[in-house]
Image 1 (tube, helix red, strand yellow):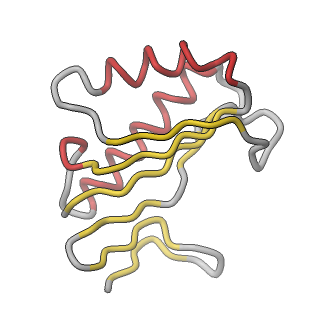
Image 2 (cartoon, helix red, strand yellow):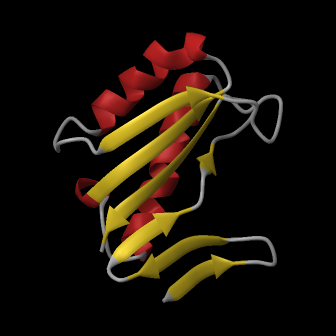
Length: 112
């Protein structure tokens, strides 16, 4: 097992048996839902590249929205990000997030 980008609370990347687990990614609290979603996905892309993978190998994603009223706007960014590859299995729900101005958090599991 490998843990990368670790601190006392968590690891951003955990690799075990050729499966990559990423911690939840969030955007800038000053941005709207579209920009926050894109920022999450860019961070996910960077972490996957560091782990030796890419978005085409994402197996599963869990998306938390502060409000389901942002579902369509988040999906527009999500759909565009996956336009060149098939998307993963996915769950999406509404939840209070770690900061009141966070609108979305995304975590993924991917193949190495």
